[in-house]
Image (cartoon, rainbow, N blue to C red; front, side, top):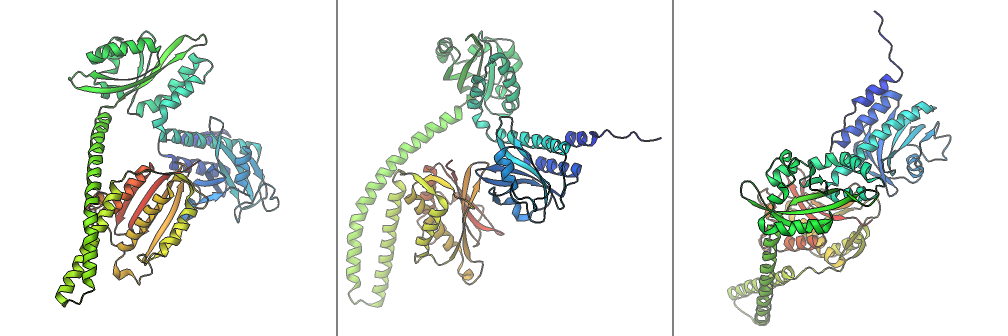
Length: 540
């Protein structure tokens, strides 16, 4: 029996249908896209790139690029830059003979590039294919590449949406308000955001103006402790669930707010427990201005409010302790200064050796007390910032020159800046204090036995993350690792592993980083040593 020949489009359909994107698994899916395109068109190399601010990053490649896959490349003068900037497909039969559109990677001549355009219309990257030998690409091949580009762009767009779920409230309201035909737009929006609503911890709901619930996300059952199906058939259950002391206020706010409400109220669950809810809703109107639907987000903020209250009490207590500490420090510093002056005066007198040793010990301990008092004042003082725009590569370069002149810094420091300027908003004096403290700690962490070792160095790197719009500043040393039991305690006040430390250095660093809305992280293991990372938002 003779096999039935395949339709010309069947291999394409088979490859496209085999692509299966799952939320959060972007890298593997893009690799399938690049591999499928290369196999169908018999290409030597295909890549999927993410482009932003005149630079690109490779997200998937059909050949192993090793460490080069993690680098950020400039779009200037490249074929990919032409595709990204024009937003149109580009076909080059022989890039060595025609360089009008940019240069191809070494060893490749033919080029086919298609922009990755998300549904909003923005070009976010490219899917590019290369051939060692000159080649003419047909219009059918360009259209095929567009199909794969559409799949890749959709996957990247969905991935970004998944990463930004916390902003779903604002995005949902903006999406609905921008629609001209509200009735059709609401149906589309419900479908578009359904997958997000199924996964967020908040309760996403839609109801009619008469109170009839049309949709409740799965989080409702966990927050209210009741069945969604029961609420969809009884419009009075919402009011009945509200704490009696808050019920009349909420019903009045709902009546006067015309659907737009941002209120906090308590609910009584079926098990008798009381939860605090923040409910934000807004009306959806038709073309005549009549309220057609009311949508909103309800969130259980019980633990958050309790934490805020506890934090408020802790802050008040800390402020009192800080004021008391400052008073005690000032009271102690004056007599301590007198004691130090007296001890230094006695030091000039010729004394027996045993007495001189005791005198030296007394001076060392008094000096340690003075340093401790200074750090207590620094820690207790509120972190009032004077932020300005800083280019982090240049700032660290200048700071590093000062650090290298310090007598206590006796280790080699290698600085690896970001490949392009990175700007942050920070207080330069306090940030300099942070870096000096961390570099000093890194130097002290290197054991005395490693002084002559070629690996006994500090590595200071700046690593931007274009996808999260953040920058990571990392200080690494290869000294002895910190035990897992000690790591969580390092940033607590007065905890130290040093024989003469005060235990306030890292605590002060953390307070400064927190004041910048940054994040301080410490990792340590036998294989890689210890690394301190600071994460800041990049100015755009």
